Image 1: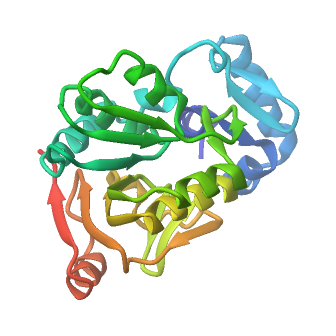
Image 2: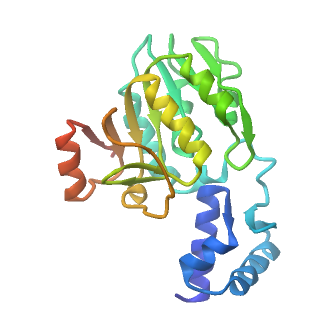
Length: 252
């Protein structure tokens, strides 16, 4: 891979995840950590990222109200959110996780009446701070500054006290054995939301399928009722969804 291509991929990774470690990029691109640090130094000089101990974040990370990942594949994420809106009914109570895809859904949910929204996401809090047509329940916990969300055992205990009609979840990876995440704490919160809801709706763009670079398991497909995505997945996933009676919605 050429250096210019590698830097583009590095930018994409940091946009998507907020923070990426040097060691991970070194393994992924099969180059030395010295080379990765050189790439990050150049990107920092361009004003694209800010180097931190062990990795890099977006320079604007602490000031923008939404994660930079909102800008990655934003058109597709908006289409997925629009398609998922058809699944929300008046009177629903819904869990919304802290992903950028779900934040696009939150923008639409604000227009509905008599919906109770439950989330651990600060960007969602910002969107709903003036929401008077329904209710927002904020999940407290330990702040994860990279995802601008609350996580940890306190957050999970709070979720366990609630029960929602639907959980809208956007995992970082989908493998045949189940849903995956890059963060153990985020995975645990998503698992708790799934357990505390009547049904689970996955909102994922095509890049999440077979993303085997996700370390932590969230759950299997037992509780999943619907998958909303932007492309028809491969045959093995279609067969898997059929086996579990999972509805597939492909956004236009």
